[in-house]
Length: 83
Image 1 (cartoon, rainbow, N blue to C red):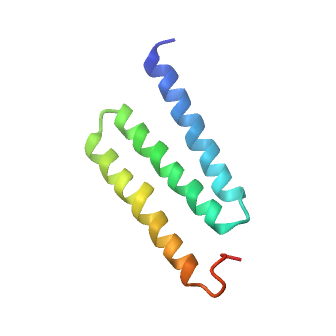
Image 2: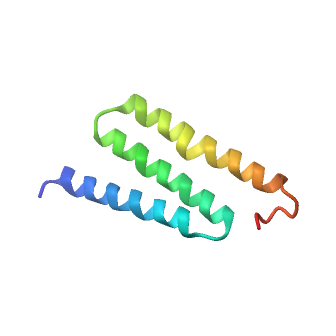
């Protein structure tokens, strides 16, 4: 096995596990954080596939902007705990 193959397997496992955790968490803040981690793994996958422009876009939107918008929305809700 080459280093790239091992890196691909680690990225795919991280992507799948973080996506499952994002769906599994009952606490909405934890789910949003897991969604951000999914975006990081997705950006890493694009980087490994030699698509740095798409990786930068995914890191900016999927790993940073979307979780921030969700966290702000959760804080604006009554109670602020997301329940």
